[in-house]
Image (cartoon, one colour):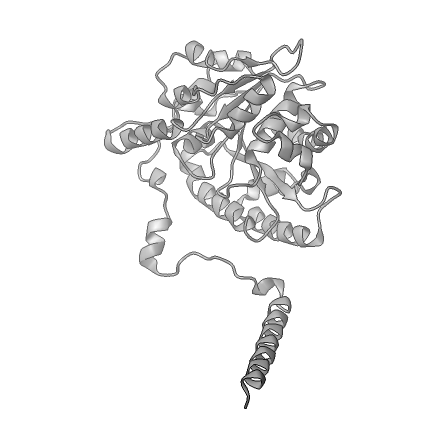
Length: 353
């Protein structure tokens, strides 16, 4: 056989193989999509069944159950799902008319994205840290709260929003506090934030607090969960993000009874959805599966809040939201973005009551 014939035959066989592979892939059912599952061997499972934060039984302060303004934690184990965007814009919704809530924003992610977003909207270039004071717990309450100055976003703005800032050195502070907790007997750090947010100074100055957390269970995340009244989980409606929301929920539910029994699941916000007008069928299917699993994990939320996944509060991909990222708050800069987050706020606000 000639070299030309052999080359042509090879190309035909390669094309046939590609067609067979393509048909196999496109013919897969949803249930055939690869899912990452925990390891099955007992030795490995023993290492991951309990987080390091569960090694010491928590000693909750007596103030833990006292009444205070709503404290909302926005968190998920999956990164890139819109946590910071939702925190900043929900804060703007609550602090703007007609709500006029006095809002405290706390940036507990060392990347400082919330800080950059809020400060950018206020025209402030100083991104120095202040949120670390809430973790260290060494300042008197009245002094600590002074590290959250009012943010004035417009002319004649009364400064309804205040911000505790974070930036990269925040991670070093977290690590130092964590090492102290591990090495010093009877040293409790998990409720440092709670002591501030349960104070009379906080209760008189604010009507709601929103905390932006990193996609990890860190010293700051544990403090946020231990102080919070409600948890909001943003997630994309895809096979990469949904498992993160489920795994995060299972971890928290295992820790909840001992560490933060007052924490309630407010709901799940579908974020960065595919179209502006609603959820696509593939997204609805993914979210329906998540709803089913979360109803098992958070039975109290299923009984009290109706649907856990707030499908009508979806946050679509949006150019104005992307343009505002790290520079300002989309709710205050664009009419379409304002409509989006007003819809989110209308779902969240009644559940905070």
